[in-house]
Image 1 (cartoon, rainbow, N blue to C red):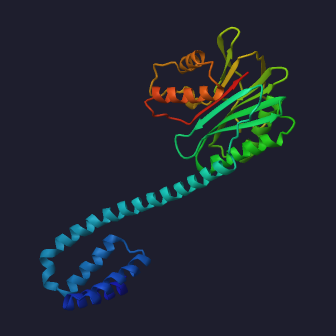
Image 2 (tube, rainbow, N blue to C red; image 1 turned 90 degrees about the vertical axis):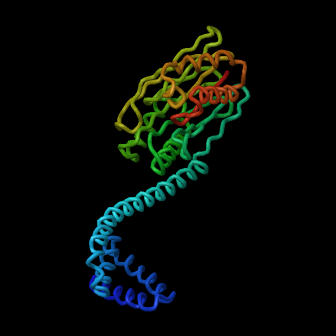
Length: 331
């Protein structure tokens, strides 16, 4: 510090004598040394004060309190400035992480909706931020079987994207076993339990439609219950299946249920971003959804998905509080 004070005194003394651009330039370059040695703003003021006191000793009697005041101000300024810089760095790191996670989703986790002649399938998945916490994955075998996994990952950034990647590749390894919802959830649960941080939670609704037999089997891991519209009875039924969230415990067993589908029946699979009307607690979200589907059941599956999104977004004053994902299957 004494060496810096000596250098600064010389620079200030030269500047006060000549006050040229050259002297000012030397002073500006000196700040690099201060930064490299991590000298705080209040210490810079103190160095300046000591230099002035040595160069102009008679002036400091009146100016002493002003310098002491400035040092106190700079102490708090320095603390606030360092905190601000730290926050900016963390924000930059977070934005970089989100960019990586978004790129993972766009390239690796892209969802393609199958085109089948006997089944009408629609899907919409809208994130409220850059990174979508919902993930939809389809598996199908020509015109025999159609399986769909709707997943909600409670987490952010790269860890959430990597978790979705684990879900995707776990599902794709089940080439022939994907027709059994219980087995699928048990396998994915073990995969996630081994590779995901305890702070992350993953829910999944998994359903498999035997197209030839018109039987839809389904299981759930702590996910929002799906809805089933029976055209014959003109009634909606919840597709409830109890099961623990994925990744919580390694050896959890999941049960599955079955329903028979008839012509014009509809299955609506969604995440809780569709059913939680946080800005309109007085409304029953499921009644809103069933009314919209019932009144517009003549529309295609994709049209129904788009209509649900627009209407629910409107109900919530265009301020959705969570990622919005709906998959609709019409027979």
